[in-house]
Length: 360
Image (cartoon, rainbow, N blue to C red; front, side):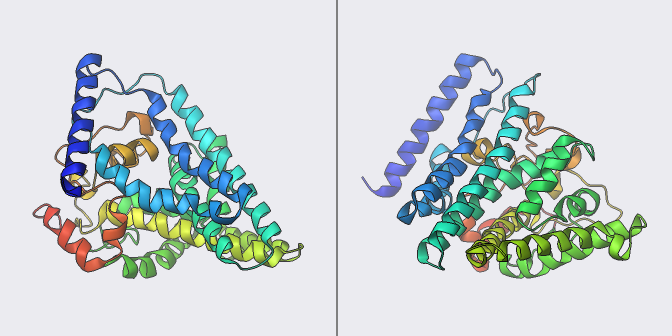
């Protein structure tokens, strides 16, 4: 039996098991505990940072190599379950992710302080910690960033984005991206002809400029502009780190992990809207966001993959998002799309044929 046949057999067996469970439960809501799978990455990273050495690479191995395999083997949800009435366990999960991220950062700074040099294992810790921030913390910040301004949840979202040196994201995302998604006025929507690398080069500075404009339209210009104030605060934090023993290593590491977290976030932005276009006056529909029901991505990323539902009503909490059968479907989960997406020619050939007619 070839490796391809074995993989197909495993996937079919898993899907049959899930289908049987669905029949037995009569389409009851999914167990909320499935979303605990999202804690594997930060727990591995904390453990790796505390143990040091080769253990610091556990997060990289799990997210970049194990994650795509899990996306493929676990397959997609075929029968969407009804949503739960109570969101309490999911709210607790969000806060656990946010607070655990602070522990992840603390474990990294401890490791960087003890390592005291630019080593291979420091690089591994930077990559692992940055990927954990993207897969756990930024997902949480994205969800909490849609809560009421000045609420405790919104403040935690701001703190998380500050911790990865991307403080302007919440402003730009809420006030520009959601309004102009899939139009030329949105720097976070990727064009069909644009590869991931070019998108990164355009969107990262573009979103900062966009956030400055959002605040300026509210009358907060010059040094009163919060985007500039957050940036100044980030520089101040870096200068403080440099003043500490081994602070140069910690500061460089912090910038590195922030870079990985930001690139991963913008990779997700890329695949969620790539090639989907609408006119400035055209109403936004479910056809302007890519979706996937890949189980591993759904469960570990807090339903981030049901993106059309999120854009149609941003205030809907993640546990109440529903799939939209008519929306364009990614060829794989968020983890499985990572490696093909890094090679634009492969990505465009793989995903391009799925762009709906008239949506490009």
